[in-house]
Length: 193
Image (cartoon, rainbow, N blue to C red):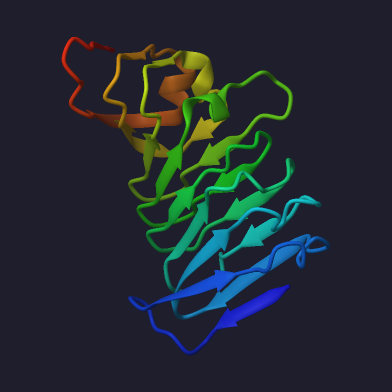
């Protein structure tokens, strides 16, 4: 499926919504054009076959919002050369590439649990890329969670609960240099790095 957004310009966001159960056979979604594009992945959309979503030819910014956990394992999401916003699907086994630009990835800790089977990967690419763990409760992040992460420069922990971060060789490979930002912890909560 090829979709060209030629009526918009960078800075003007166009939205792409696919109808539930009508895109089940799609295995490639190529997004091109000059507009900024928001792809909403809703329940029962792109959830039957692995799909490659490719916005690398888009000259505007790319944003993917996936609150449904619908993408099938084996899928791949490729951003544009601009500052993209990527909401990482809750399903495991999806590859995300930010490419150039200062990209922002939002992910839950459990999604990056690297077991060696069906793992999710994040590649920030060029630019100053930010990975945000958007969990709200207590979080414990060990070095193994960064096994399939690369090309990141900033890490944000948004939880207001207890936060624990253990850094090792995987973390060092994921972040050549890093700025870590944490949310303000609630009363009687701790942050351990």
